[in-house]
Image (cartoon, rainbow, N blue to C red; front, side):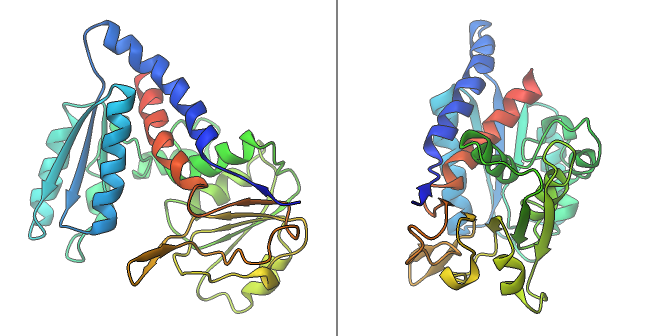
Length: 277
């Protein structure tokens, strides 16, 4: 029987932990301060930040949303990031940025001590040590999901589709560490036989962003499938996994929507709480 890995109870668990830290600040007549910066009017970006704003209100975090015009230059953006980093507890630069802006350049203007997304070179680099503190929110959401539902990773074959700095790079390093002891493979658009790799996976994580890209024929019986990808077709959003006929074939599935998504926002505030503690 297929177990659906819903993200809501995992998110609630993280929120409870974060709230304890935030309440300490509130008791001292302070509120933790989180700034989000968006450039342009990308609908998905605005939606994501609005969800973060709602969660901030729920958890007692002061939320400052800086909305910049599409025409904002790299120098202007970098200066705003550097100035904001001095006055707050956490800062997000919502990706993707308009094509004329360099995301790497912008992210590394964030002071690593307020980098709640965990995307600066220093925080990503720390994942190659045993002393990392901040894990990118989407990656953290996957780890917390597996932990909550007690899905073991030791000596399991984990295949990650996609190669973003948000998901595949952090997870590949963390899963192969001594804490998780997994056998990790990253596949991508240049991988010639994706099905062969996926059919050998005990845990498959997809972060491609292509609607219903993987169907039942890609998976082996009893595997765990986690759908992170999001794509939009004619106003409707879809995950990467075509879930038709999967019930009773695989053991565990984190769906889209309702799987990793709800945890990701809570994971961001969990990172903020860690930076404060």
